[in-house]
Amino acid sequence: MTNYIESVLEITKKKNPAEKEFIQAVSEVLETLKPVVERHSEFEKTSLLERLVEPERIISFRVPWIDDSGKVQVNRGFRVQFNGSIGPYKGGLRFHPSVNQSIMKFLAFEQIFKNALTGLPIGGGKGGSDFDPKGKSDNEIMSFCQSFMNELQRHIGHDLDVPAGDIGVGAREIGYLFGQYRKIKNAFEAGVLTGKGLEYGGSLARKEATGYGLIYYMREMLKANNKNFKDKIVTISGSGNVAIYAAEKAVEYGAKVVAMSDSNGCIYDKNGIDLDEIKRLKEVERLRIKEYLKKHPQAEYMENKEGETPAVYTIKADIALPCATQNDINIKTAEIMVKNGVFAVGEGANMPTDIEAINYFLKNGVLLAPAKAANAGGVATSALEMCQNSMRYFWTFDEVNKKLDDIMTNIFKACKETADEYGLGTNYVAGANIAAFKRVSAAMMAQGVI
Image (cartoon, rainbow, N blue to C red; front, side):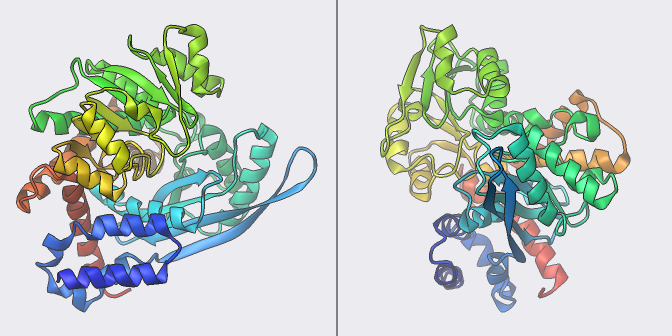
C-alpha cells in the first residue's frame, strides 16, 4: 500500500511539475497517511487518493480595473473548489503579488483537512488574485474588488462556495466584495461571504478567532505534555490579525511576547511587546513595524537580510508562533530555533514550516502544532458566522468565543487520540492529517466515484 502512495505522489508531480507549493502540501499530507491507507485496500481500488489530490474545479479569470490615473490595469483571479464532499467549499481570498495557481491549490488542499478537523460541514476551497492592495487608494481597491466580484459571483453561493478574507483581504475588501455581490444578485444573501462587518451580518470574535484559536490549541497541546504558557518567552512572526490576537491571548495566559515582525524585519522588546502600539501601527495607521521604536526607543529593530534566517527566529525563546506566510521556516532556521531553546512551535500561518524543518522539529522533541489544526479557528468562526446568518440571529462575543474554544479543544483531542491510536507519540502533524483524512475519505467513499 505504501507503493500506492508513492505512485500517487509521482503522478501528481508529473501532472503539476511547476507547482512546488502544491507538491509540497500534497507530499506532507500523503506521507503521513501510510498507516491508515494500509488498512483500507478499497482506497486504491476506487482511486481515492488520485481523486483527493485533483481539484473538483479551478476557475481562473481576468480582472480589469481602472486606477486613479484613469489607466486600465489587469490582474488574474482564481477560485479553486477543491473538495466539497462534507459541505460547501469554504476558504479565504488572498490578494497578494505572489498569488498563482500553485499557491491557490496548496491553500485549497490544506483547507480540506483544516475544515474537516473543525467537525463542521464545510468543504475545502481557496481563491484570490495577484493584485497588491498595498499603496492603493480606497477607490482603487473598491474598483478592483467590484471587478473581481463581477466574475466570482457566478461561482459562489451560501450552499455552494463561501469565501472569506485572507492576506490582503480584510474588512474593507470584504465590504466592497459583498456590496457588489448584493447589487448584482439584487438580494441580501448574508451567508455568501464571511468576515463581514458587524453592521451587515458579521460575527463577533471573527477578527480575533485565528489568533485566539491558535493559543487555545497550544494550551491543550502544552497541557497534554505537562507544560503551559506561564512565564514563557514567546516570539511571533507576523503582525497581522493572527499574530496580534495570538499575542493578546498568550499574554492573558501569562506568557511574555518579546518579538513581532513584518516582511522587513522584527521588533525585539525584552520588556514585552506593547500590543496596543502594534494594533495602532498595523490596524489603524497601516505602518511598518519599525515605527514601534518612536514610542519605545529602548526596543531593538532587527532587519531581515535576503537569504538569511528571518530575524525574529534568531531570538532566544521558549515558544515560537509563525503567523506570517508559507515556508517561513526551513531546516537552517529550525536548527537555530532549537539551539535557542524553542520547545514548542504553533503554526498560525498556512504551511509556514517546510517538510525538512518539520522532521527536524519532531526528531528533536519540539512540540509542533500543525497549521491545518492550530489555525483552524478562523474558518471555524466563519462557519459560526454562517450559522448566525442562517438563523438571522447573533451570538454574543462570549458565546462565540466559548464555541471557538470548544472547537479548538476538540481538534487537539482528535489529533492526540489519532496519534495515540497509530502509535505516533507527539507527532500531531500526522495525527491531524489522519484524523481529517478519515472524515473526508469516509464522505468520498459514501458518495461514490464522482
